[in-house]
Length: 239
Image (cartoon, rainbow, N blue to C red; front, side):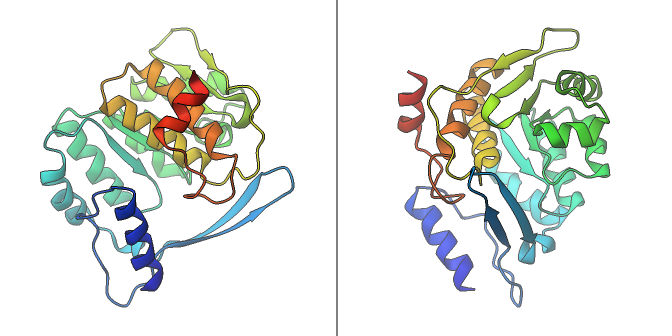
């Protein structure tokens, strides 16, 4: 449909390889309806559309060639669970780090812990997944399940990083002087930036710090995609 064609054109213009995108006849492109309040916070309603048709075999087929030389796999939960599991399974087989943005959080999410992914929940999702109201305890609970680093994002406060069991939970503050206009897409920006830096070979602590700065940059403008910063813009904030 027109929405899908426009989205693909925008991605191509940004230099994104869209060869793995499949057009689904008689299905609408997934869409989100977003309401933003005066403080920049948002509420989002999502219509999955064609995303709901993604299958295990479709993911396996798309990743078969894409994982050659790949440095990271990034997965969100806005597609069917079997498709998510297929992506994690493929990443594990190739020994490629997998980042899971567990949004929307759901009960089946914890089944994915067996694959050892890096979870990047926000504070609310971490609480929902673990039952722990304390963010640091929630990070520890997820880490015990995955055996992998956990990053809990916390809006304007930045993020918390737990790199390994029994280690200190590190606070990664947002850069100062950032005024939120629209928080839509900040979590997506964070996870994308984290995966990008991990794929480039950064240690998880450096990658997470970069991702916090990227997420902060994303809230300075309206729109999910239009607010996402370039690497140069993030580097300017990091200093």
